[in-house]
Image (cartoon, rainbow, N blue to C red; front, side, top):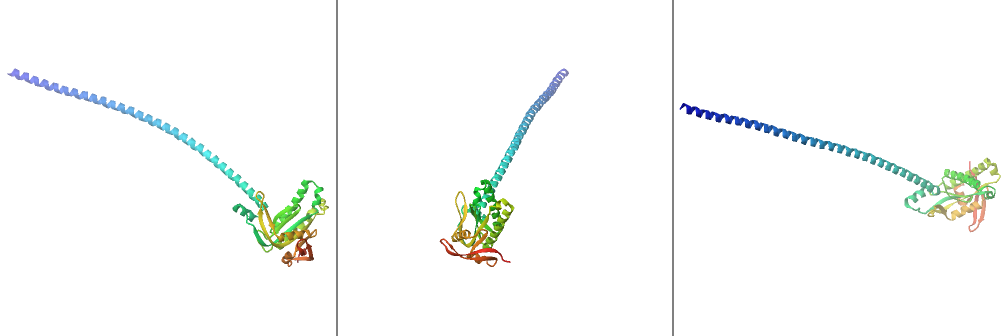
Length: 312
């Protein structure tokens, strides 16, 4: 009986011992497998991390390269834009200089007000001026010089004389109209209307006589030529306007202009011959000598006066 109990006891203990040993082995194997799996996952993650890091580094390098190229392009484009802007600025300066030059040339041949109107509208409206004073000047003796001096000296002397006249009339608010050979035409009272046109014209004429006298006294050779001025002035109404397309000419027309021309041709060298209408406007300021009625072709008898000088 005892032997049976002992055999049974040994059998149960063996089974229990085997089960415990098996469980331990399973735990050990599971732990090893788990460790291997964890290590494998770590290695996989490390590989993935390395790939990601490498990709990030490549992306960084690529982005750096793109940024550098973009910066270079921006710098290059900025330079191009700057150069283009500089060229535009220079072109604008050139255009402005050409415009200024054109404006100066236009103002040299046209009164400033008329030149501005022509630029803005493309044309200048002809105007009637009811009261102006027209001054004609002829340089007596100048035509005889043509055969005695060179063309260059002739033009030089004529330019000097007319430049002097230009300065004088500017000081007396007169407007130059044109020159014809050795004749000079200007007018007071247009394009800006004023009431002193007759006084301005006579004052300018007296100063022209002084100018020609000084010019000859400063040039003895010129003085031997006996140059003198013959001046005529008339006051009245005129029409003024611009004619021509390629070459503009500001001119005046009317009976008053024709009579002013006759005043000059009917005058005497070294004197200022004025009409009745001009005399009526300046008689209180200037001493004048009545010449009587002078016959003028197609105009009949006309009263004329020589201007002696300004009254004290």
